[in-house]
Amino acid sequence: MLKKSVEKRISFIVLIIINAFTIVAQNSTQVQLANEYYQNGDILKARDIYDQLAKDPKNYLDIHNNYFELLIQQKDFKAVDKYLKKAEKAFPMDIYYKIDRARLYQSMGDMNLYTKYVNDLIERFKSSEYQVRLGTKHMLSKQMSQEAIKMYKASRAAVKDETKYALEMANVYRQLDQKDNMIGEYLNFASLRPGNLRYVKNILQTVLQDQEYMEAFQAILIEKIQKNPNISMYGDLLVWVNIQRKDFYAAFIQAKALDKRFKEDGFRLMQIGDLAMENKLYDDAISIFSYIIEKYTVGNVYSTSKRKIIQARESKIKTEFPIDKNAIHQLTLDYQNLIKELGLNNSTYDAYRGKAILHAFYLYEYDSAINILQNLAKRPRVDRKTKAKSKLDLGDIYLLIDEPWESTLLYSQVEKENKSSTIGYEAKLRNAKLNYYTGNFDLAKGHLDILKQATTKEIANDAIFLSLLIKDNTMMDSSEYVMKEYAAIELLQFQNKNDEAKNAYEEMLVKYTGHSIVDEIHWQIANLELKQGNFQNAINHLQIIYKQHGQDILGDDALFLMADINENQLGNKDAAMEMYREFLTTYPGSVYVSDARKRFRKMRGDQI
Image 1 (cartoon, rainbow, N blue to C red):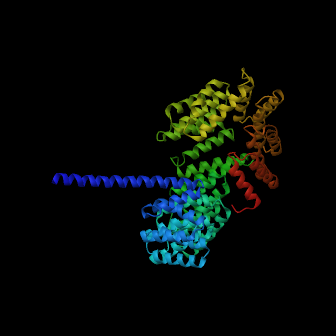
Image 2: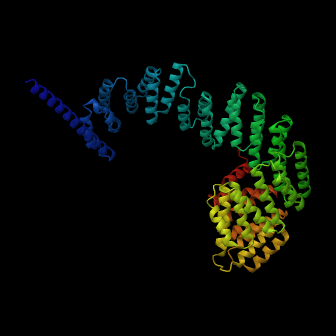
Image 3: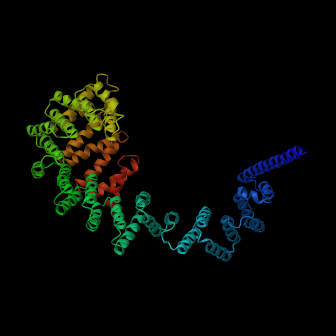
C-alpha cells in the first residue's frame, strides 16, 4: 500500500511539472507571436494576445514594453491605468512600472499630474542607489533626460556626495548639448581617482573637436585654477587642451606654473618642447628648451635641452631657403661646444653624428665628417645602436662622394648585425635605394618586397612608394632606359649636384614628353628650385603637376606644397588660404588633409 501511495504522489508531481512547462512553453509562443504582430504593425491581433497574457502577472516582464506602447498608441488610457495598477500591485518595488505611470499622465496631457508624480517618485527612491540607477536608465531610454538629471541631483543631495553619478550625468549633458554642465561633470569624474583623468582625456579628445566645447572647457578650467590653485588636475588639463590645439607655447606657459608649484623638475616642459619640435614649431621649441636650460643648470634635462635646442635651430634653418651656409657652420660650432661642455658620451653621441652630417651634406667637408663617424663607430664603449647609425651615415657619405661599393659594404654590415630590427630594415632600405640609383632594379625590388612588410610604418611606406615608382615607369619600357636615366639623376640630386641634376631633368622633359615619368620629373625640379630659393619656378612646376596630372599620385603633394610655399616662403596668405580650401575639396582622402584644415582655419582666424 505504502509503495503504491508513493508512486501516486510522484506521478502527481511529475504531472504538475509537465503541465507547468507546457504552460510556460505556450505562453512563450504566444508572447513571440504577439511581438511579431506588433513589430509588423498588426496592432489589433497583437492586442488580442497581449490582453490575454496580461491576465497573468508572470507575463508582465515579457510583454510590458510592447503592450504599454501599444495601449498608449491606441490612447486607451483606461486600459493602461488598469494594467499598471495590477503591475504595481504585483511588483510594488519595481520602479519601471512607476516611471511608465508618469509617462501615462504625460500622454494624457496632464502635465501637472505628471510633474507631481515624477517629483514624488524621485523623493521616494532618491536614497537608494540601486533604484536610482534602474530608474534613470529607464528614463533615459524613454527620452526623459531632464527627469533623469533631476533624479541624479536629488540622490546626490540625499547621500551628500556632489560627485556621485558624475560620468552618467556628463553623458546625459553631452546628449543635451549642455557644454558647461557636461564639462563640469567630466571634471567631477576625473577628480574621483587618478586613473579617471586618462579616461576623461580620451573622451574629451573626441568631444573637443567642436570649437565651442574647446572654448567652454578652457574657460571652466581657468576659473577652476583661479579658485583651486593647489589642485594639479585642472592645470594638467589646461596644458593638455592647449596641446590638443597645437598651441604649445600656451601649454608651456601653464606647464611652467605647474613645474614650479609641484616640483616636476622640467620633465613636462621637455615633453612639450618635443611636441613642438615634432609639429615643426621650432621657435616655440627653442623658447621652451631655452627656459629649461636657464631653470635647470645641471642634470639630464639640462644636457638634453642643450642638445635639443641646437637640433631645433638646425631644423628651422633647413626649412629656410636657400639654406644659410654661415648658419650651418655656426651649428657645427654649437655642437662642438656642447661636446666640449658635456663630454662625448651617450647623451652627446647623436649631437656628434649631427655635426658630421652637417659637415658632409651642407658644408661639403667630407674628410671631417668621415673622421667623426669613424671615430664614433670605433669607440670601445659606444652602444650598438649608435655604432650602427654611424655606419649608415658613413655609407651615405661614401655614396655622396661617389664610392657606392663602400656604401653597400657598410649598409650590408649593419643589416647583417641587426636582423629583424628597425635599424636593420633601414639598412636594407638604403641598399635598395643604392641599387635603384645604379639601375639594378631587380635587386632593388627584391629588397623592397621584403621591406613592404616591415614593422615600421615609415620604412614600409618608403618601400611601397619606391617599388611603385619603379613598376609604374618600367611597365611599358622593357629596356628600362628612361627609368635608369631618371634614377641616375636622382643620385646626382642626393649628391648635392643640384644644378647638374636640374639641367638633366629638364633635358628629360624635352626628350620624353609623353612618358609616365613626367610628373615625377616636375616634382624633382620643383624641389630643387625650392632649395635654391626660386619659389616661383617651383610653383610653376607644381602647377603643371596639379593641372595636368592632378589625379595621379603626386597631385595632392603638388597642391599642398604650392600652398605651403605661398604661406611660409612668399607670405602670400590669401593665395595659400585659397589653395588649402581647394585642397580640402579636391583631395578629402589625402594624408595632408588634417594639416591643410588646421592651416586653413588658422589663416581664416579660427581659434584652434
